[in-house]
Image (tube, rainbow, N blue to C red):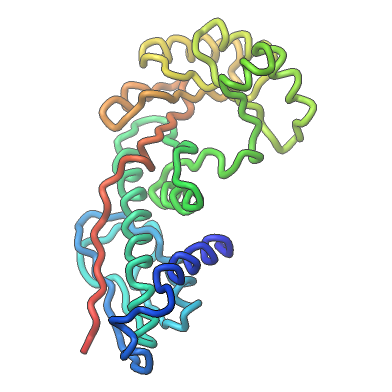
Length: 274
């Protein structure tokens, strides 16, 4: 597990290290101990498991006092020990991953906790290349829904597919032949008429894209009355200021790109014990 991500992080570390870290070179035969310090309160921590595996690649021992998904306040969250040179070249990547993942999980948790009802808050595919799985894992640690992990996890027909296939019905009928019983078909629509056309053609999920909250609720209500089995998702133009306007008994999923694209980093530091 995390094999690809660990290879990626190691590659970044080795490129950063280049031939060697000049400032740390004389410490290559020295062992040391360091404390990882969380400098913010009210944090849903994320990134511990991946960091433990990364540190292990450099023979650095670690002991963390919290696990992914825990609510934590500022203080020492863990201790590491090993070769001083290795600890110093790993330090920045380690702290960056903890900072990013904890920021996403904390933001997700804060937003999810304000939802009163069955509607779920989900991420989107607006994630950084290579880091996407870690960002989505952080959403999961924060209590959100990950949405698709990759393109093949579900069959999602978007506006450009509809244009290239020559319409909603053609798009649905063409991709149906690739559908397994384990896969759902989702389609993105921009108006109520297209939503009902998609429902008529037996899709599993309808995404109401860039609907106002009032229009989304009304369209979702009509769809659920006739097609109660269809999952209704809303997306587009949704942020932390307006997402609660979309919470409704007929809306199953609110997906928000800003869960991963607009986050305030959580502050971590490493302090070496002398």
